[in-house]
Image (cartoon, rainbow, N blue to C red; front, side, top):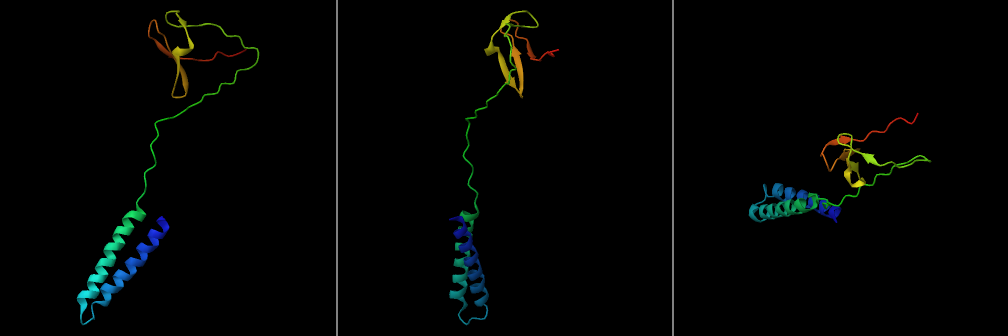
Amino acid sequence: MKIIGKLLTAVFFVFGVLFIIGSVNNPNPGRTFVTGVVLLVICLALGFFSFRKTPAPLSNDQNITYKIDIPANVSMDAMKCQACGGTLSPKDVAMVAGAPVVTCPFCHSTYQLTEDPKW
């Protein structure tokens, strides 16, 4: 539909300009000039609607899924806070800027989880 609007905008513009130019040597220029102006006004209205960009719908729903590959033979130990030694649960771990960050519910210290070498 926008392509048809753009084509009609171009056609009305060309005919509007031709009518205004044609009114110069016409013995009765009023009617021809007014017709040209009306065609240019229609051209502007069509151009406004056909060249206008429609905004993309905003969506606040973002689902981010992190997949972690764990090698075989892994045993899970209880996580302890590095500052106070309190037991941490999975709800205390959050992803911040792509890195796992732990916030201790007891001493409120925050630090990034690091993986120790396997060797």
